[in-house]
Image 1 (cartoon, rainbow, N blue to C red):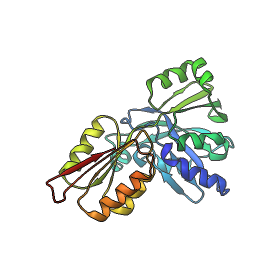
Image 2: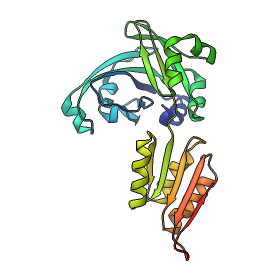
Image 3: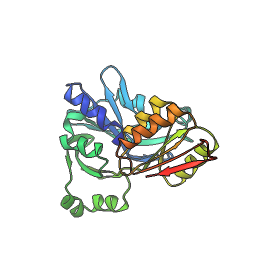
Image 4: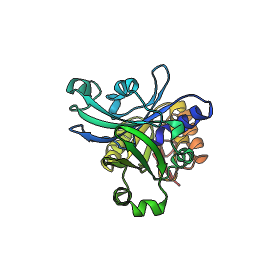
Amino acid sequence: MYDVALPARACIRAGTRVVAAWAVDTARLPATDRADAVLLTPGGGRIGSLLAGAADSQLAAATVAEAGSLATLEISDLEAQAHGLARGGTARCLLVPGDRLPAELWDLLDDRRPVALRSRLDGDRVVETTLLSAAEVESDEAARRLWARGESGAVVTDDAVVSVFAPTTTLVLVGAGPMVEAIATQAQLLGWKVAVGRDAATATGLIAGLSELDLAVVAAHDIELAGSALEAAFGSDVGYLAASGRGRCSSSAATG
């Protein structure tokens, strides 16, 4: 949900209908980031991806009630494998129009804050979705358990879905080569999201969206690429910055 907060808010402000969809329950499907979401716009437009994209076409064709719907999707093994998943399975997803989600949600997501939502259900129809306060999280057993783990997830009952979104540390790597590949492998073992920028435009765009939770490592020998990335990093909110490159000395490193 964090990756689509900015475009969702832009669509809502422009008066464009947009539906946010996220998975709340999966069976047999390989584990994916439960904070992932996709935005569906008129005409089949999509921003973001859900379940590695395997669910996107079914979500685009789903019927959405006025305040939202809970949809059950069947993803075949063939469809799953076409999107890089090991096997298919069943997923239940919430689809909620952007203007029926709490307005303050988008600011919280944009600031990379953890949030908890409760979507009240009438069968598979969403009645309303509200943002839970800290006190409400403490008083709701399902929300409290999810919140305490610091991980994104959801609990589905007969009459409600409680969804918790927790930001995941993102590492942006700038450059290419064995060092970048080795750092990416280690970061993924830690459960971090990894994004690689191999050109100036991509790298600066990735860095611009970082927060105090995130890290950037510039390991590029190209002056234009490294310089642009470092300039973007110094102007961002990134919590950790490291750089490594070659100059007249054999190596140099800087952290901040």
